[in-house]
Image 1 (cartoon, rainbow, N blue to C red):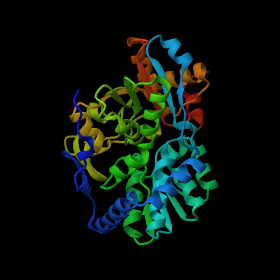
Image 2: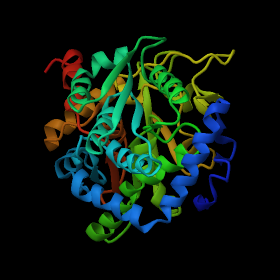
Image 3: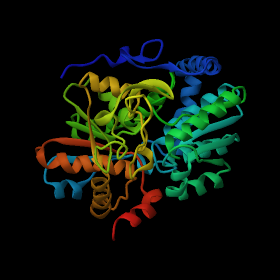
Image 4: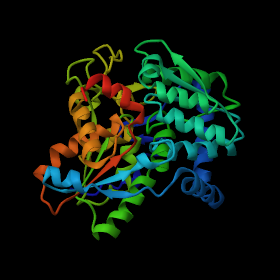
Amino acid sequence: MSAIASSTVPDAHGHFGPYGGRYVPETLMHPLQELEAEYFRSQQDPEFQGELQYYLRQFCGRPTPLYFAERLTRDLGGAKIYLKREDLLHTGAHKINNAMGQILLAKRMGKTRIIAETGAGQHGVATATVSAMFGMKCVIYMGAVDCERQALNVYRMKMLGAEVVSVTAGQKTLKEAVNEAMRDWVTNIRSTHYILGTAYGAHPYPIMVRNFQRIIGDEARRQILEQEERLPDLLIACVGGGSNAIGLFYPFLDDTSVKMVGVEAGGRGIEPEQHAARFQGGSLGVLQGTRSYILQDENGQIQLTHSVSAGLDYAAVGPEHAWLRDKNRVEYTYATDDKALAAFLKLARLEGIIPALESAHAIAEVIERAPKMSKENLIIVNLSGRGDKDVAQVVDKIKL
């Protein structure tokens, strides 16, 4: 496997090869250019970086541990398994890394109002949290179906002072929530910053979110070298839009010995409208600001999706993931609902860790791969979130 010169993408217009770019109404071009300029300035500003590092450490709880899952390793009988414990962050998931970075940018730009979309509710909670912390008004758009299956997170957002708008259009899930957030942004451009939650959307969001999340992989790289004195053989992460996965993968992209696997939502199986595995049933298209792999019919109409996990239930995937797949640098597979639910219980009962259903998709792939690997091999899996939010839903589906 050859190195891919990851530092050369995206280009100045946000393209990862044929993917990415900026496909938005004219009204949004200026705010996106303003955001891009401010983001790149902040990258060179020691004061901004110092403030971000301070809050990530003192408020969010970084660095997160790289934990050797001894009982899971023994049970599977193959490779040594390490969990990158993003579930231990404040608010319970990796989403706070990006929300904190973006709220500091919004503050620099003089914005007073924050909007966001959310599926599983973890990005909504993270956004509501940082908005409360910096005294900004906050509106979160969430599909009505997701509001129901993630009721705990809806209550958390409201307790933090956010207004939660239940979106009843279309499939009533994440795609519709993004649509409503974008409509709001067009209308309230002067006062409002849109904290997009994943490595998707119009440039500069994919690169910006990736860079706010790369702290996951930077830490994991240092930690595995300290604990094992060598790099891992395999990285595994779930992929919805793809921020937790690209956050883990990016710092290892030029390490040719390290294999990487992204796990999409296989839902009820790879049949139209029964899954959210874009690389299994998708094709090239444009959705919500960017060009990437999308689940769509022959007329370009966006197909319905399904996943037991609200955070993976989305019709498109981040453009950098599409590029990495083309380059054969990352392998993309999927886990079905049933396998994710089984992995959810297995981790809870072997390690005393209840994972988010999103993260359980990554654990399901570990369960497939670890037994086929040598005991000398090392796997790092990104445990992107904790599962409190999913307990009621899992109880409905599994007899305990």
